[in-house]
Length: 448
Image (spheres, one colour):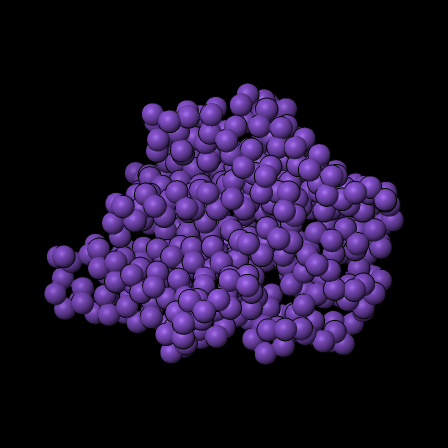
């Protein structure tokens, strides 16, 4: 008889899933989005939740449905070479290129900048990122139970702080949401703009990389049947998805209402620090700084360790685990010194390319579970998603590059795609290709 999850085990899996989705660093995005979305915050919020909460959950479900051992095996349904390249790009993105240095810059923006005074911010950032990455590297090289113990208290502590912050804002709002004017693309396309803003969490990429941990844990608890695994993931995931959606909604609203008293910030880290200072004064700002810094440090240790493990496995004759740890920490230190705002800007083109591929991989996995094992269900939509997403990535390049003659010439061909002007040119071609692949499988079967 197939074993099912007990309530205690379901709670354990749920807390694990919540820990994988919830990160202090990610909260800078909904708060800044709220400032920009203004009275359209509900539409923007739902778009953000779709890519920031639902899609990571679907990524976990895709791994569970297919029984894949990880992202490389899942992507191998397209082609082995694609799988290796996609996996490397994914780990570089959630590791040393963007997410890892972002943990340091978010901590700096929230935990240090409000207390800098006349100190040179460039020098302060360099010193802080060096110390931050050195500590993270030390723990990654020699894991300690201390960081595990601290981690058990971080999420509850930060959730408590957030609840107090939101409660203070509800009792004494800075402004009326209905009176805040939407800015930029949020004035006309709030949902799609929020959808793209959700890319910045990188949680779909992270879940593809780490969801196998959740599935393996379920297997170790005796739940091995794919249908049972998928059903239990849904049961556990629904609670986590609701909780995460509530958190993001509260933070988005907090950002929107803050525009009644505060100016638009350059990034969400600044906004979150200003809001905490407004309601709780310097002591509240200091408490938030400590909690966020420790939470980001815990994330940084995990990212260094996971990425180094993967690269040591991919390239066994190269640096080894410890060598990759050092290399990634050094790269993250260098990247981190460009600052939080610039990291976010530089990450956008990469995410505009990788996210459509990741979403397509997830959709194809569901199609495979429903319609058969043919690799056409992966290959056809992935080819068109890749071609179209390349155009979306080019259009998201920093202005100097995006306006170069070569890029403008290439983008001229992409303008025929529906939704391309909104940065969603991949959607229609991908869904058409997936539909054609499904029809093909129905007509000629799984072969080829």
